Image (tube, rainbow, N blue to C red; front, side, top):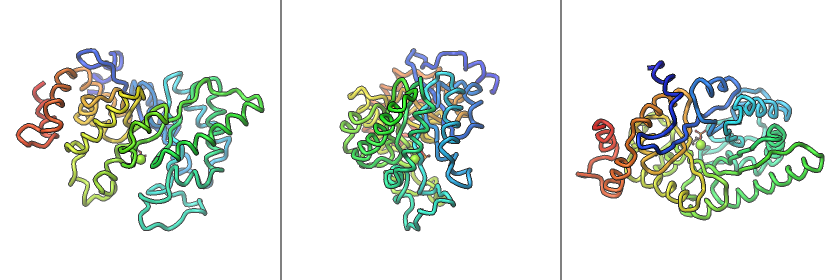
Length: 326
Ligand code: PEP
Ligand code: MG
């Protein structure tokens, strides 16, 4: 198997009928970087910057942040990297963060962009470190847990201020700066066109989006197998997102666990996703599926079944039958 995956690295990342799909990897620490070459990933679709904060015993200094981001970009050798601003709070607690509060529902609480907009010093330091590390290169930044478009505007103001500050001091700036939002909160589903226009790209955080759409705690083992990520309602949500991206010419990717299982990656591609990001170990198996996939047939399958699954069967069963037949 490993041998087969290694061979696959040299093959183009396309479906059997020649449609390109970018397979990116998720990462978060310097130790993940060798995986970029080993997995054959097209880039890093999600760099979880909070991991550096979680393994530290105090807030990482600006210099340490900048060094990590520079090391990541150096290791990527021109492949695209998307940095997510710190996604702490919720289940990710920093013991040394004195401002942390006790919350009844941490998943719905003071976390991610909500927290960093309230503590802008944290965000400013991180953004400055990212801008400096990206001097002369492209910087792709994305914001976790966006709920309202105003949060994007607020973050953009902070970014613009840092850019102005650095250029005043004649720092080497990024050649381009792209700002994206993670789509993990259902409120964004009801303003998809506005969202697509407000950002340069969107990345679906399917772990959190599923948790909030189904009202099911992502960490609760009692419920882990109760609801299906490949159920018709959730697939319809994903289709609406992919369609909105296409309609607005806004690149859309997905970086949750869903992207890493061949059957669900197949579904995502059939729904219109042309970029997905997963753990490095999943790239080989997903690419093996991709290169065998007749996308024209899968598109027809979704046209027939997504809104009215054949014989009322679960979509997972229908997708599995589709895969088994081919
Ligand atoms: C997600 O929610 O799907 C995601 C990619 O982010 P995280 O798992 O870090 O919350
Ligand atoms: Mg998330």
